[in-house]
Image 1 (cartoon, rainbow, N blue to C red):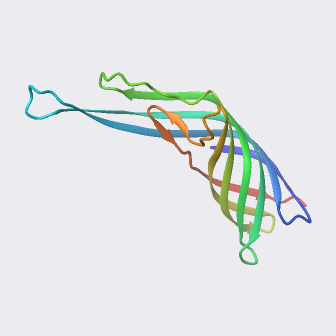
Image 2 (cartoon, rainbow, N blue to C red):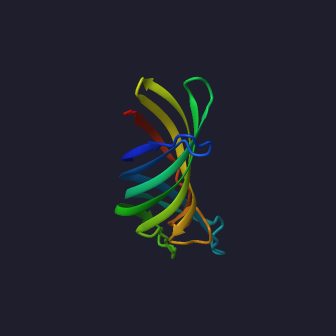
Image 3 (cartoon, rainbow, N blue to C red):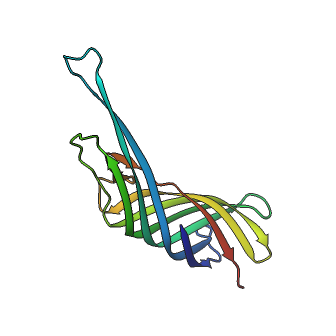
Length: 173
């Protein structure tokens, strides 16, 4: 994915170091495979069907997050972030070969609203630029509500998105 946004440092707070707002595009993709064994009394060996599918969902995304940054060394810090994101699916690609089996397929709603957690390590690149590699995952889905689950139902499985990020903060003052 790719996002652009703005962050604001919070002075004199022990809990929140900075907040950020962003807009962007992200791609979630995954795969599923299955194997079904059909028992036929007229055959000496069971008949095995194999199939599966892939999906690629592209979302327009907007997020707000609050970050606590803890210094690990003079220049390096640990980023712990809680945030919310709203994602609107703008494109999807799905291909599933059921091998003729009657299988119900599940798909997430076109609009998803979630809370997420992000953890990363920040370090300076220059005097006014900071790079933060991090990993993000949903922790709760508000819409479409699904019994407090944070995973997405796609095909016949549940998927936990892991979003790997490189955040570049440019300091202006």
